[in-house]
Length: 452
Length: 89
Image (cartoon, rainbow over all chains, first blue to last red; front, side, top):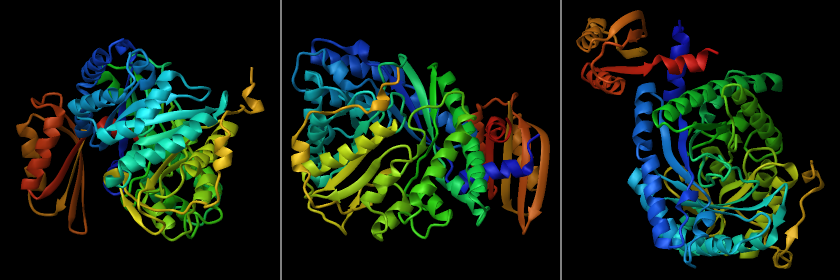
């Protein structure tokens, strides 16, 4: 029999500590939609997404209601579109993005990911066409998210693609300048992208995946923060144990919801992504967890060590709670989506360079960072190259999602709205990396890629 | 199916009777009750069986929430599974 305390503890986590399921994401393979006619392909894409995900939102809401746990997002990820669109005889890929957008609206989801290309070693004609269409595709659609993988530990870094993505980010910002460069919030550049990530904007349905799957991303920075408040001043062993226990509980709930959703939608369960995903709400911040460990402000000396402990303890606690763990799994540090990060960035303590160091020990990369609108494309490419290098050498996923805020500079603020939050424009180094980026070619894979 | 119903509100005469009347009307069987009053606030945790209920669980939870509002109480019904998942290996 459950004890009174256990019941009240769970209810308190949901009511007071922002515990929620961050996303149920249905991955759908679109490889069967390839067609020489772009028009037919788009129709097949729309039909297949709508057929597979017809009951996704409704089922999510039912589970929410029955278990009393909020499920914040219901989303869809699809096969990287360059692979599907490549079969069609057309040079304009924007209609494919529009088909995805229409399907997302018909299903009632709030994002659809997979307008993507995987170019870590080289680019096909289709990859080039897709990348060229990204600024337009993100400007004319509402819910489509795009990602491009430019490097991997096995393949090295495709510096031609890095250069191209620097320009693409810049163009996307300009194309959506009227909305503070909102398009860039839907565009991620990856190194070592994972095929089963349920989180946007980087979700896509990898070619190694089944026809369709259910992936679930959990959350819960507020719960971890609250748990750490009860072990003030205690050694790190105690901190790590506390985080592990909390992560276990959060993940068990994710596993339950994932299994239930998978059964009801008659779709195989893929993975639970063990992530601490913050929101801009007060009390739901990863930065505040780091500060609770004893740092005056997130971004000061000690932040990287604190984050390393947190990231590792979350995985250790979560991995036992789920039958299949995957995705990005770790702590997220998106600046605009985290109330504590926003405050730390505003105060000038949290800088790009510190964030870059933090990405070496947590699950993703430079995420949701607004930079001055006049930042050159080469500088953005160089930021991408740095992050990709960290991912490549450390055998982990890294990503860049920066928002060049057109007409704005350091001290200004970009309003993204909703879960995407508010981003103070952060300074970047003024010194040029143009000659470095102009070289192109490939940065070879590191020695430890040869593991066979 | 077992579920946990929690009831929180300002203490007064007849809360248990009111809540149980709603449950009985919907053919929900009460298995266990634990109740206390803390600083004028009434809190009750009930384990119930909803197998005989005519409404779906989601509808039942919604109904209880609405009835709770009318009675000036916060009534929440959640499936037992979520508590077991979180607190039992």
